[in-house]
Length: 253
Length: 165
Image (cartoon, rainbow over all chains, first blue to last red; front, top):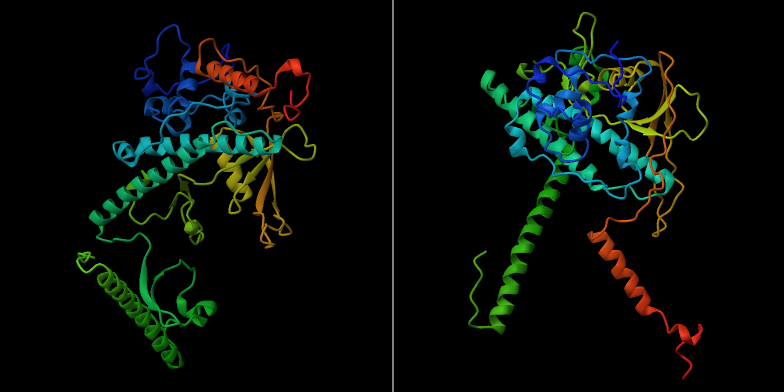
């Protein structure tokens, strides 16, 4: 078991990042990592992300007995407790994320996830104590970063799938009509039994019965009437304006 | 690496289709990039020292929580118990419509290896004196000056300006 440092935090630097992570001799390695990952900027380099997320790398972090480091990650660093505002940087943009490798994105996801859990904890506690939460915009930044990360990953997956198989969609589906006469994209669901043995599925109607045709016709009429109404109202407006301002130029819309 | 697979049996980011049908002999179901978020809450009722209380998304199960905490946070988990808290439907808004508070799932996690946890005080009273020559100090001084200007003449002894003289 590794001995605790004076700061009480234990970090086993993954072997591959020991040479990469350059720190001054005066600064404690762990404190530097903590400062980097916590709050200063969301432009967290992947290097600093690695130092914390050793478990995703090749080496598992050494666990010491009675270390609450796990649960401490649900809270901000103690210097920020009681502050009215905490500084944080800009969220990740999709453009920046596209430059990162898959492993880095994977690790960044977990960094963002832990930060988000921490912010949610602080938010709930602030509601409980009836105290304003310090810097609530951090939550929005994290959320946006995570959605952008998701978009980038799905983009890559789609590209790979298109190249390897030519399938545009990951989940198979088909165009089907429903009882109301609408044609929609039905997405397939995975079952353990074939469809002809599935009672619930057989009750669903993927066709439009004949008695629905009048209702469809009425719907189409309504839609066409609304379209015509719009065109007519625009024309009438223009006519009124032309009467009032004879030399008016007709807008090119 | 998961991203090289084509039709991912193992789901990405725990979408609603995560529970693809499992049959005997299938490989272990895995989730990459889970988008489940836990909130550590202060317990309303007194809990034993090894118990931690979380608010979790409805879709999570006890096994999910155990794996989540063990793999992502390195917390040794002993037992997990969950319950669903019904959010009240009694409140009304200013339009006299019923307002539903959201339901949420609560998990009581007991840690293994004799670890204990007490919910800390995250909002301690801090001395808010701003640094010398800083923006906050100037702002505070300005506000105080403004308030001083609004006050009446102290020589009037608390009498309002409404009375003449």
